[in-house]
Length: 113
Length: 111
Image 1: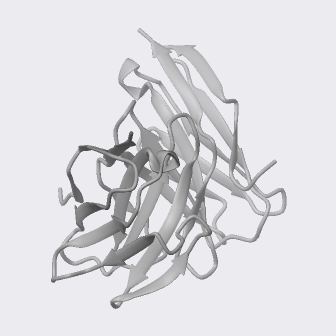
Image 2: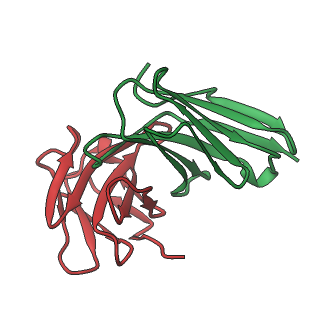
Image 3: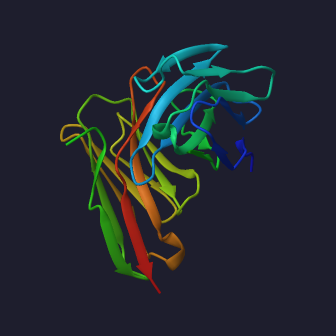
């Protein structure tokens, strides 16, 4: 069964450093998303992306965050200057149409120290 | 309560019993989805029910949706120890570009 692949699975970074989280969505999917889950809390929406544009973003997704689809397969989330409160599990997801169920990746655990 | 709140927060049952989890939400939705998450792992899509549907089945899963009460339930029949996980409801907005997740129900199925 097709999977959404996320790398790395764990990342530890110093506060103030830039991080890039990588995702390979399912190849024929057109809609891409990033969500995050702080330990013990709800899964929170960050951003949705379609046709090389952001289609929706949450209040969390401020100027420190950016997304990019640099080629036909990768979808990245960049955090420019990480803060302690950015520590969370970050999930990438994709679907073929926006009203389908999502296929999520296994997540990247980001720890900011 | 907030959009997509599950009830109960935790549920412990014996193998073979049925498990019922409820979800309430506040705003209008396009669809409601249920996901499963094993500890520290990714979210697995279980079932999607659209706002014009009332009931849906998939294997041992049965989902109902009552848009007048803004609530949904997930029933897992004949539970197995392998069903132990957290279960989340998520509502899809009308634009179809985001999901709002609830806090989840932690299900433990004892062998």
